[in-house]
Image (cartoon, rainbow, N blue to C red):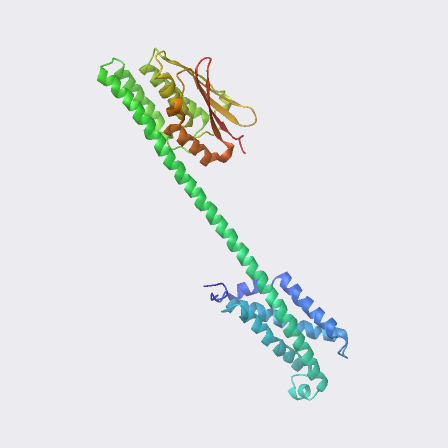
Length: 354
């Protein structure tokens, strides 16, 4: 059903009086003055008297237009109401002028001619202004509806982004847990004396990590603590082949940081860099804020990512999470270095408040 066809219920006196705005009253007064100026050369009565008559008719037309707008069934109702009200308002005005005696009015050719001129002017100018007001009202409604649609679309897009982030997070978490549990299983099956301490460390790590898996308010400090617990766990699994260090300034710890993002880089360094290397290697975690954004990196001296590591699920999901949360302002950069060999993985986030 189009806006022209949709029935509009009565909205009461409060809405009626609110519709009598300053601009609408100004338009009615302008209509009266315009009609009086145009008709003044024709009438023999003084201009103030003529202006008073046109003002009376203009006010009645305004009240009729607003009243019809409260109960109209279609857009043209207000225009028809104005066209019908113009001669009736003019007749009422002349009857008041002659003291309510219709014979004096109908018996005066001058009054009859004045009635025709004023009523005709009211019909022409009133209907023209009514149509203009309806067009402006339609445009305002269309703009308001477009704004409402835009807000609804933005809400839906935000909800879709949140759902996508939740899905990607759920993919990251099992990936890490299953890899770690597989390492514990291998130690248990081999009868290693490190199995029990490793399992104990894993339980402690999971107890600390689980509350943060879906934390939307994670900070760089909490992620560094989580990485430290993970590296301690990994060092128990391969004490002779893993060395690590953390160099993250304490003033950067309160900065907001994607949950599990730093752990994803560290886990990839362990899995694809340190673990496959017979000699092992070193992992360095650092961060800085150079004004252009927050830079957080993980550098290892292992074998390197290779094709599998560079295109793995963890890094692909991390890139998608960064894009969903920060847009094009965030990025994940990977580079291999020769001396010593290994990989430099760096997350760049936009400046705080950007």
